[in-house]
Image 1: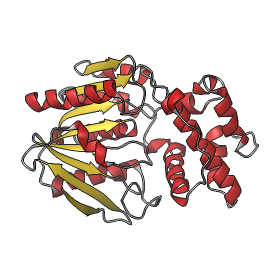
Image 2 (image 1 turned 180 degrees about the vertical axis):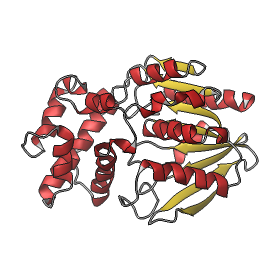
Image 3 (image 1 turned 180 degrees about the horizontal axis):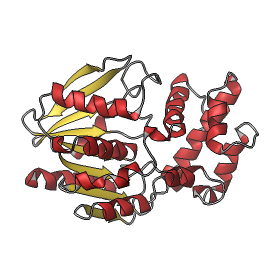
Length: 304
């Protein structure tokens, strides 16, 4: 295994890890968030004898430096980093493997550089539409109706105003009040964890760390900038992806990114394979989800 930092030409140094077979099928793992990072167990989806496995911590995430930096941190920058990395590794084409926000990034990169993509595996697709944000942050017709008690706790941690929830979140998390920041960050993380994990989630009452604050600020930075893309941009530009072998995997129980997104993506990419897992949720854990992802990489290794 080797590691290095990609010099992006900006303030960001992007952490890269390579493992597996250097002569194998190149695959880049695109993590979620945008505020997360790669973990050692993300390698488990790929047969190391068949794949040249590349993990990348996106700008300001994971082991990339400086952690949490928002300057020059935007979607086009992330896409440029992926392409710069491909060229630096002298990879002609590679497989994109992305979940949640990582699937967003995979689709956007593939739409910009379709000739460099040999295939895609997309989990829990997030299309970054206003409808997706409304589902997660709407008091009337979103997932708040499923977890009203957790939603109420989030609301009570925010400043009282007529602004929408996202604006109130930003007001709190980017404020000068340490108590307001900590309360909002804690309840935002509790909200996201509850929606993602359901009954398996255990409320977090531990002290909020500086790293927690920076992660949440990055997530809100992307959300309040509409993920730096136009409304419905992904679905409207799927024509260039028609020849790319694609497997879309989605848990029926996913409440963070409901199945409707992958369903709509499949309508735009009818040649893609859509796999619906009846018992899986949003997280890339659990036997059903892990088996489906490993099976997808094993099958593509034969056909690519």
